[in-house]
Amino acid sequence: MSMRIFVLAALFLLSPPTFAQPALRATQLAEFADGLSQPHDAAFSPDGKLIYLTDMRNSRIQVLEAMTLKPVGRFGAGELSYPHDAEFDQAGRLLVADTGNDRVAIYEIKGAQARLVGELKGLAGPEGVAVTPDGLVLVTNTRSATLSVFRDGKLVQTAGGPGSRNGELRNPHDVEVASDGTVYVVDSANNRVQVFDTALQHHASFGGALGLSGPKYLAIDGDRVWLADEYNHRILLLDRSHQLLGVLGSGKRGCTADAFHKPEAVLARAPYVWVIDTYNDRVVLLRID
Image 1 (cartoon, rainbow, N blue to C red):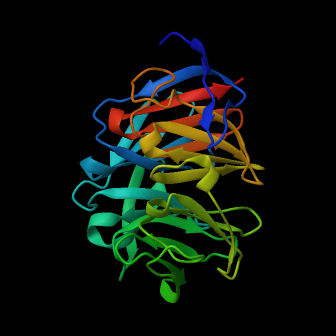
Image 2 (tube, rainbow, N blue to C red):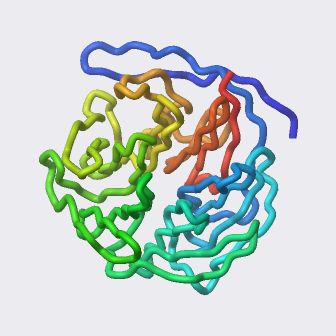
């Protein structure tokens, strides 16, 4: 596929006033869509060479080469039910938010080969999973609006609960952990992201000024945060103070290099960004110039 260079519009509406954010220049390097059906989130392999993509409606994991998006294998058919998220733990096992089975499925991984070796049970529509630096597993539950915390396979804490106040959640999706242990929870139905300390005490929230509409999954890359703003058909780039730096996507539904259809997730490893363009059933690799 030929490389296409484009300027990705960075338009952002505040009330009042309306103003344009700095444009992001990017080059499209690759695209993969073959057989995908509403892909959701993905995880890098520990060596960074592969991407493990939750192919949600196909109820499987698609394995791709990170820098080419060439497919190298798939697994999970017959074991998973509408998986939404995936994350590696310190032991190199892949944890999959197996939403339809109300569990986190645990796989031993060798390249594109996988073996189901365990599960975390007792969940309620899990759609996000993350691992803290000290080995805790965090899982968002969409139906109970809670965050479950596991240590060594056992539930040790439940945080959150239905509502819109600080620390409360509505339809929580992604959970991510920064290198310092700070926890980010995408509080989707409240159109915000909540930030918690290592003890899961509420620290901050952001999103109101961004005009979010159904944010789903985010990626932390150094001192930057990328956030998929699903119903606005865009990907936001923020600094660690949660100030908007720019936008990927036109903001309108489309299927081109700079237009998406309800993208739910993004991966980032500077200067590269992988957009999970969910309702276009594709993944797009971009280089931010």
